[in-house]
Image 1 (cartoon, one colour):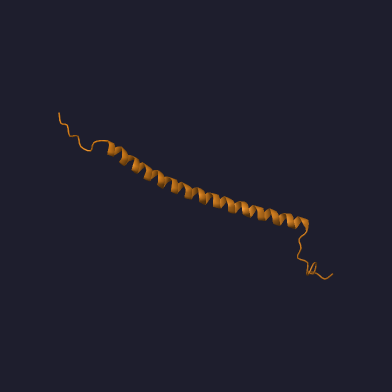
Image 2 (tube, one colour):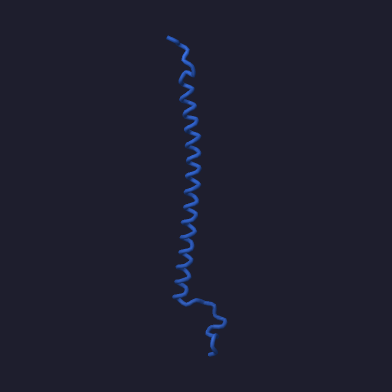
Length: 75
């Protein structure tokens, strides 16, 4: 057999190479999932904080509506 021509037309992987490729693929999906989870958590935090801020503003407005704006009784 000539040097460099071990398997000229054979592109199949042996068991060790296949396990390594599967492990790398699984690791890449894990990394992608972690990144998406982090981005989703950040978006959820921003959305939650904005809703909480709006709810706090409406809550303050509702509490101020029940109180008299001006004290009309002067002693």
